[in-house]
Structure formats: C-alpha cells, structure tokens
Length: 153
Image 1 (cartoon, rainbow, N blue to C red):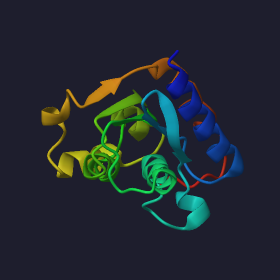
Image 2 (image 1 turned 60 degrees about the horizontal axis):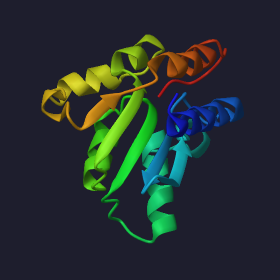
Image 3 (image 1 turned 45 degrees about the vertical axis):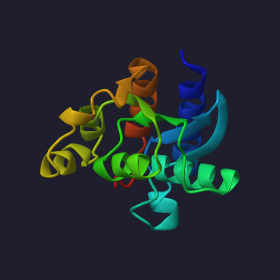
Image 4 (image 1 turned 180 degrees about the horizontal axis):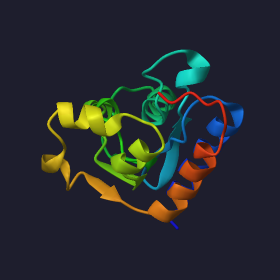
C-alpha cells in the first residue's frame, strides 16, 4: 500500500475515533514529504467546510506559509466532493489520489454523488484524479459505518 495513503487512513481513523466527523483523512505531499494533514472535523467544529481535504490544505498552507500548493499532491481516503475538488484546484495541487469513490461515500450516508451530479460531474478531470488502495480505505468506511449515533454530513 502507498505510504501516504496509509497516513491518510491513520488520519481518518483518528477523526472517527474522536467523533470529529466522517471517515475522511487527507495528506498533502511536496517533494516526497508530508507537508499537511487533516481529517473530517465537520461535527467537531460545527462547520460543513471542514472536510479532510480542506483541513489538510489549510494545514499545509499554514506550515508552508503560502496559499499556493503548486508541486503538491493530495492523498485522501475518499474521492473528493465538489467543494474539496475545487479547493484542490484553487490551491494548485497538481494531482489527487483517492481510495473510495463518491459512490462508496454515498453507500455510507454521504451526499457527494448528489452534489457531483448537480455540478456536472468530473469527466474532464479524470487525469487529475487517480484511485489507489480502495480496499484499505473501504475498511475505514466499514468501521465508520458500524458506529451508532453518528452524524453524516
């Protein structure tokens, strides 16, 4: 398994064990080194924009003291929703690697697919998005799905 996806999974597990939000962890990498990390904190922060990718982007920007993440890649446990995908593009992240698909996200109660359809899909971004390590990420999704009284957002 990819070492950065392993870190994203670890970050996702940290978030769900703390009750912070959904099973979404993300890592920002520059020149082969992690420069940012984050997990879904929607429930913890009462903020619908605190998805794992957005938290990782914020963390990387703060650490690097910039808003421009050119030459960075992002690894995330779930295919980015339209908001996070746009955030990656605005940050100039050059490539996104994801584990579970937006259809996998939907299976555990998230609305990414609904919003993706409203926004016109992502066919033109297929070279920007690459799926890796889905089976390992699905394990985290299953762990999350077994939590009782969770809030999906």
